[in-house]
Each structure stands twice: as C-alpha cells, then as structure tokens.
Length: 396
Length: 173
Image (cartoon, rainbow over all chains, first blue to last red; front, side, top):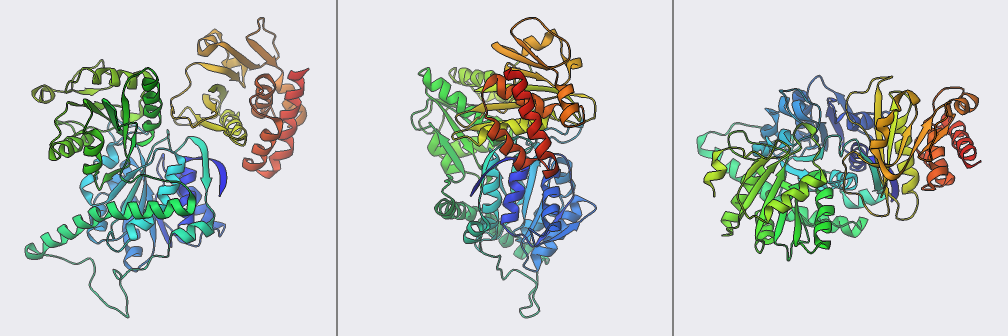
C-alpha cells in the first residue's frame, strides 16, 4: 500500500483500475469528469486493459455497460446530476436484467435553476430504480468502495447494479491522504467476474426478455431479494477487505458515540466528518451527542437505525435532498424504520447543502441544540428557520 | 489545526501550491491535510482562492477557511485591507510584492524577481510555498521537494525546487 495525496475522483478512479473492469463506457460531466479522464488515460497508457467506449450520451453509456455485462464482462460507468437523469430509463433496465454494473455518481444538484454544485437530489431521486446505493465520506472510503462495489454487485446472490455516490466538489475535488492498495492485494480481494447470467453460444439462454402479468411479480420479488441479500454480502466483503487491507467498515451504517447518546444526528456522505467533530466537541462539554452515518441507502438499514436510535431522546436527519410536497426522503425512510421497530421518539428533518450551499459547524451545533427541545420539525437550513409546511406541524 | 488561505489569479498556480503544501505535510508522520480550491468554473486571470488545512488528526470540516493562520497573495493586486478580516488574531499575511508595508502582520517577498531569475516566468506559487515554509516552519524543504517530485511533471521538478529554496533563504535572511 502507498500513502498518496488524492482527490475523491482520483482515489475512486484508482480503485476502479484496481478492480480491472473490462469495459468502461462513460460520458464526462462536471464534477465526475476527472474519473472518466483518469480511466481513459489508464487505458491509453496500458495500465488498465479495458475497452473504453466513448459514447454520445449517458443513456448510451449505461446501455453499453448493459451490453457488456450481458456477455459476462465487468462493466463500469460514471455520471452525475443531469447525466444520471438522462440515463434514468436504463437504470431499472439494468437492475431488472440483474446486470451487476458499477456506476460512480458525483452527487450534484439538478436543474432548474442550473447549478453544478453538490447535493444528493440526483441519486436520492433514483432510490426506487433497483440499484444498491452507497455514500462515501472521504477519499479513502471512495477508493475502498470502488473496489468492494464489484465484489458486492457481482455476488451470485446479489447480481444487482451498484451506484457509488461521492459528494460533488467537497469530496470529488478535495485532496486528502489515502492509502492505495497494490494490484496484488486487489487481485487477492476481488476475483474475476464469473456468471451464468450471460449470452453464450455454448450455453444459450434468453436474457432481457418480456414477462407478462402472471410472472412479472416474481421477477420483481427476486430483484428485491437480490438487493436485500446485499446486506450480508456487504458484511462479508468488508470482513474480507479488512483482513487483506487492514481497514474496517461497519456495514450499512456507522454508529459514532450513539451507545449512550440522548441526541443523535443521522446523516450521509462527506458532511459526516464535520458532524463527527461537533459530536466530539459537544461530548467534551458533557452533552450526550451521537452520529449515525448512513453508508447505504439501498438496501436500507432499517434494523441498524432502530438499534442505534432506540435509547435516544430525539433524533434528527440532515440530508441534501427534498421530496417536494412531502419532506426529505431519508427522513421518510428513517421514520419508517423507527415505526416498524416500535420506537416513538421525536424526529426532525433538516434539509441542507442544496446546490452546494455550505453547511457550517455552527449550523450543526444549532441542530443538536434544537434536538434538546425534542420537537418534530422539518426545516430548510439557512433560510431563517421556516418550517417547510403544515404536515410537519400535524405530525406533532 | 493550521489553516492557509491562498489568493491568486487563474493560471498562477494557487491551487497547485495549496495541494503541494498538503501533500508535503501529509508525508510527515501523523500528518493529515485537506486541500481544495474555491469550486466553480475556472478562468485565466480571474481571482481564485484555494485552501489548505493541516492537522495531526483526520480533518472532518471540509468548509472553506474563514479565518486563516496564513493568508497568501500570489498577486498584490488582489491584496487589500479586507485581507485582515480573513486572518486569525496571530495570523500573518504573506504577500508577493515589490512594495513595502509596515507592521509585523505582513511579510513581503519580491517573488516576481525570483521567479523571473529561476523559472523565467512570473509564476510565484512555489516561491510563496517556500516563503510559507520559512515563516511557519509547518513543513520541511525536503518534504516540499518530495511533494514536487511526486506530483508535478518531471520537467518542472528542478526549477521549482530551486524556487522554493530561493524563497526560503530570502525570507530566512
């Protein structure tokens, strides 16, 4: 392993190179561009033996990846924001076809108003497309997820595409220290892709077919179970990863000082680092603060959230998305997890960081302070604290 | 944590200097650093800012630096009184200029002349990096040289290492 100073994009691209994808089809878009540029350089300089397909759009990028996957190749693509939305038709197609493609998504706002900066409305809008969704906190985790994603997606009991999300700019364009594994270590971790779900002259079968009303539900159930199976495979991959690389991950969530916490902030992505620092600061002041970091939005960590929150007095979600006319989608999912577990504590939702707006240390301290009031609110950070609508009042 | 705010114009290499500083610092044991530019479209000649954060533990706060220990100007046309608003109480301003300024809080260096002599170009990013190393003691010349060797194109190594050393010696004298 070698300690390097890398941006999130560079780290992810190195992780992908270590995974030896055979086909890369991608279209550049800010802030993902560097990943595609780096991978095309690796193919050009021979350090990655892959077909790099220059496509004319994101719709074709994912279509090509599906074609590659359907003949048993390890396939990768990357996108962001409008690009992700442009390939939307292909997302459930890839998931329903059970093609274990890995896609990196640089989280970026969606138009209008036009904005190139980071928020998570792009990927969160695609939660129902059938893809596994992971969110990295820093460059190291981005690289490690890049490598693990293929293992998880391609596992026969999963066979589901994988979307690895990196916050645009604050993660993709920030340089930090990361350990880069050797190719020998990577090869030890990740075996070549072998599947029966492919077009083959020696074993001909029908792929990507129609399924009418009688059989459709069973395919959707199997697809659902594939995503759910990722839970155990993620755990297996992380244990295997820890043995080889000495870095340990904690499954669908990461709990930080939640065991005896009264007030827990639930969040995801690169803002978690700042929340962790604020948690430590509040703890030093004698306040029982905790952080629950969601690492995977699909499969959703229902049990992990319930277990971490069970003894808290109140919890809040800090998220960079909004389901217009309702509330933040992560908040909806978290409340569902708590309700199913019979946990009835006040929860609040803070929508922040939209269009790349900075979330400050003071704002996070403010959320923890408001948690002590043990109310139910939905707020947009940085707008003067207005509640988002009547439904949150009704919830009280 | 030591926080550095770089001011330059597009094309002057402010972000490259911010990144080299972070890389150099992270070569030391328990050296953690973040380096990033002010995000957005880049245009040659337009004012840009870049940031480096240095600490002995992992850095979670990815926000822009509001109050810096060192505010560095590659170009003195960007410098004004507002620079002091971005400075911590004990902070220092490092300014590439031919002019002279009063007060202990501003450290000046004629980086353009050094750049013309060594690089043959008015590019002062590595010169201001050498100035910072001399003033702050945060990074060693060896680690800066190693960072240059690791992350700059090979044809730039020798001259930029020489530029860093020249600035370091000039400020040290």
